[in-house]
Length: 246
Image (cartoon, rainbow, N blue to C red; front, side, top):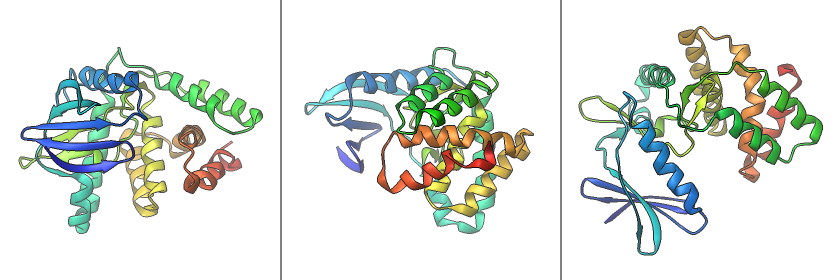
């Protein structure tokens, strides 16, 4: 097996035509099995998704096994061909819109997940109450939501086929909330221009008011805060408490 990527608590290996994702003990068995189940359910859509091939304990660690997809991530292509960024961004948004049209009724609901994260956040009760009310006021949709849709999670094969990977946060719910999370990801990466271009393009293509997505941003910021990353705390807190979006 060849180690191809490593992050906190996880290692990715290539073994021929298979991709093996190995987890350390900081990940629960239930969470790992749920990721496999999410991906298996999403496989049933019309989207291109790497197929789950198995769940095993390898060298004492719980591991997920998928088919290996050969290609470049959209993130890599953006870095390699910066002059094509706008073209790639349009492709990215079109793919997200296509994804949001899919229905996967057995997935958990984004609303329930967000309520739980708001409750688990460290914000005062009055702030949490406002966020819960704001979340309950959103239209109830059952669109497929990725939960971490960013260019590094889209692999483009040599024939131009886009494969969407990393479905560990997949839910069904409000597609604009999924877009708000993508916008937040770009902001946390300090890619200000890309974040604004993305938001305007998404809203234009979906005929969605930017103000509508902005009203969701404090909810998404509060949910992100439960990861308790010190470098994000001040930024996320400013979003949750911003008065202009009340």
